[in-house]
Length: 404
Ligand code: AMP
Image (cartoon, rainbow, N blue to C red):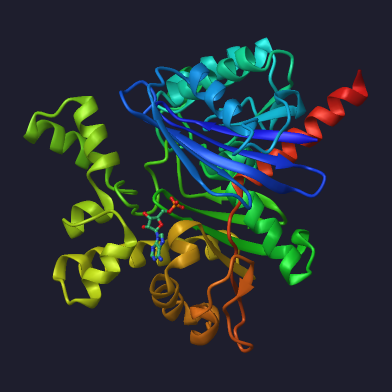
């Protein structure tokens, strides 16, 4: 089965086409600046040259049509006909408490995603645009939705509730949901497979640290705690997000600076984190370059980032009463030798010891960076959220066919 995986944002649309016979990627790409002039489509067929096309793409239906044109193009295509695409998988950020796993798209499922707009006003509406656009371009092709929150639905009430009046949970569903679930699930499973140990026996801390960043405590294969909350703002210090702070900071600053709700939201989501402290960049490469050059603000930004990350690892070791495996993934986790080194240096009380040489090796495969003496396995596992979505889509569509 060939599965097209779509990740629709408000002005962008990423795609990957999989051949599920061998889980190979046939092509991938990105449409940027949808709804603006000069939209850019970048298409990369596997084993062929990347192509870029600039045109006016006003909405998602046209974006998907252009993607399908590229996938079937004589020169740059990988398909003879669009009919070869037998299923479509979509990434959706918020599944609320309804979705505990991926689901086949039906009218009811779409209505439920719409009901959840309140909880993810920036992210769920574009997902619906992507689903409708795919439906228009490929009528009758089954679609599946995979949710960033679903993996964390196993968290217990004592973990997911905030200690605030319970009426807010009942009335407005205010609770912790987490995010990056697809990634945490994938890398925890891949870590157990790499170690050739049953995941049921393992206490794993997965560190998904990219531009957005979250940690998950995975015990026996299920998420027991995760650092993001009602929204992706809670938890670690990130590229442009603050992560944890005293909630009174928000009202205090709003009062002193006369900020509106949207202004304070923008401050905490887009103008905080590494960017705010370094005054230079939200990108860890720039921060470590600045630190190496002896620049004080970048050094402080790095130290705060590392300290907060390490505190969370300690918290999750406490939450599970131990840790067998620590996994680093996503842009920073997979690539930053120095972040991994500094975090692990200060986890010696847990028996963590990394091998500096193994830590420097780069490969696209799961690998161990802990030394033979380490009491905790420390791994780098490249994440692959699209593959999880493709697998779920394949499985759910096959099951639906068999049930017919
Ligand atoms: P992601 O959100 O997973 O795509 O991660 C993107 C982030 O990864 C970038 O903003 C960088 O901060 C970080 N990153 C990518 N490559 C490197 C690298 N070689 N060293 C340090 N950080 C990196």
